[in-house]
Image 1 (cartoon, each protein chain N blue to C red):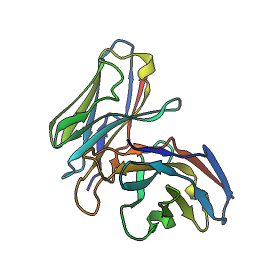
Image 2 (cartoon, rainbow over the protein chains, first blue to last red; image 1 turned 120 degrees about the vertical axis):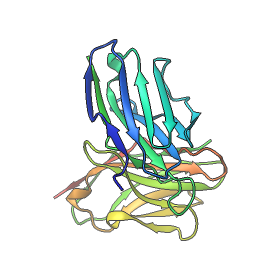
Image 3 (tube, one colour; image 1 turned 90 degrees about the vertical axis):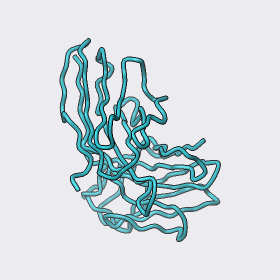
Image 4 (cartoon, rainbow over the protein chains, first blue to last red; image 1 turned 60 degrees about the vertical axis):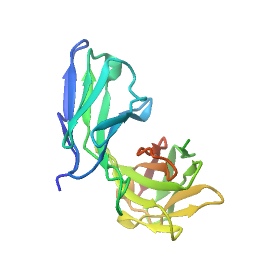
Length: 116
Length: 115
């Protein structure tokens, strides 16, 4: 298995621009998570999905952030408009809810976002 | 509600010595407990988990963790540390008695193993 795939790996953009981060979870996993990691705030859960349905978006910082999961193999996190304080590493993770590996989260390599 | 605490921001040990990274948790029901490791510029990697059964759980890279219900702790241990074990370690908890699929992560502990 290729693991969780994220793209792009690095993104540099100017303040005010729209940013779209992409994630392909591990095949068969029914949970998908989006996290943000910074030195100041550590690892923060932004939103998670179960069977493509958003379950908890209480961690989404503002209306500028939105996430979708149109099918079981793809999710996006969009920031519009972007601001310098959005600079962080964004991780996608996925997991099973059943079986011996239930709730073990497998993380992608992350997208390092820099907003200037 | 579920929460986890890692009381040490940093742990320093000499190579070859035993290491312990501490974690305590709080859940209203029974816990799923996890340890993850993050190497520089990488995503978190699953190390091991406790669901039920034997209180001593063995995981990847020679790590193990001991579940202690009375102390609500799940400390990560390794008998002999390697320089390559230097990384950021996260403890996480999920309450069995919930439909929520998410785990709550601690703030992380930086482990430095010196030659």
